[in-house]
Length: 233
Length: 361
Picture 1: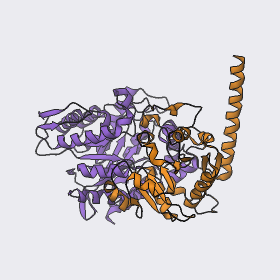
Picture 2 (picture 1 turned 180 degrees about the vertical axis):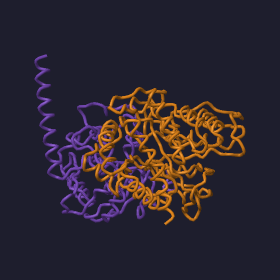
Picture 3 (picture 1 turned 30 degrees about the vertical axis):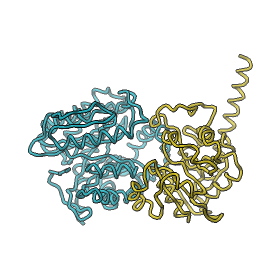
Picture 4 (picture 1 turned 180 degrees about the horizontal axis):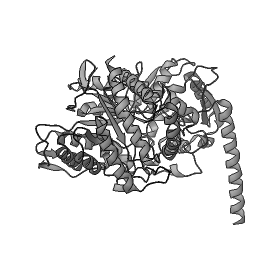
């Protein structure tokens, strides 16, 4: 473990997203471990060349030594993980449900009334889950990262139920190069999902906040209408 | 493997000379009539044959067809179309770009491309893909959740088929084979040049190296320069598996017209529409005029512009990525066939000679 200002990071997943997040964290001065479902030996070459400075580890060891664990694997892979491994951890859920690649998942990921990160959190009942980094393309992460205070700094949404966890992750997002916009509890994280108003959108803080607000109003109005309809039906 | 038999300028990568190869790819993007009416799938396919024949006439090295199964890319049987082009050409290499191997049978793929190789007198190539376009999975009853394992097993079997001779194989994704001969045999010890298309997953790069396939980087958005470490990873992975260096190629979308302005104006509305279609599924950002300006600029991934602009960008990126092959994916749903023919003409007659010149400097 480390001091309070630079939490140790474990990135689970070495596909498209994981290495990009790992490099941003390394650049921001974090120590970073990276792991897949396989052995650290299999990752050695990839790590050495693409994520220099990161340490390939077994997933359980990476999680053990980390203050923040980033889930950057396909959702269907996550479902094969032992949820107990993440017990008591602070977890970033950077995953999305892509029916084309994930197939039809057994859980309620497709339910419009519950966010995918809520389903993830339910599975990890002992962990503090924060949703962020899911709504920016992996190929854009490093292009758009900017030091604090830059006028064209891109905003990323952060959603979570535990205020301390949200504060820690917001500080992490800020450190790696983005304005963190707190969008509310984990249930509000649905606004960050595919098809939502900020998914894939390049927005600065004001534009991001406006897009989230407008969407919430729209959704609120819809759900009021829905309730009205159900009552009268 | 992946012997390039074309007469091309030698370019060096990692101290080993590979020929410089400049090709064209299409996904069979559904074309329109000159006044914007969508043409039938059948006419689109006949147009692709004409486009392939023109590609040879103007000196393009390679013509590739990417497998797709959608209304806007009605191109599920590219090998048949390539055979028609083979019958009317002499020199141009013909291949898939890509074959979605995960939802196909490696034995069938080998047989089709070995047949194409026979018809074309040794001009067939294969680029294998795991499935970034995945509409073939539900069509043929594959579960997308298995795509990683499907690709892993099937690429390994394909590598074995390339060796020639009787094949014995056992796995979970197709019936086992016991000492079975697969025909037609390749002639004169020729091996089908085989590449793996990689969209940015480092572990796919390592797999290509492990199986001894060349690496084709599909770069369709963002800064191409970020892929530079992949070429290094590929060559080092090859060395760690005891293999010799293999070439690295780049596949990038674009459009060539007489001027930068005309190219952008022609391409933009069709590109926006296309990406809008795939954006939500694949996590792409929906293009804005601002993002289009970035992607068509010097840092971006789109090769849209005049012949000089496009040539400069290709040469710069080949150098940055230690690559010796570039395939321009031309067309975007709805662009008229006539506009695509102009694109091909300019690419072959002006862009490729200019790239060769720039790569010599």
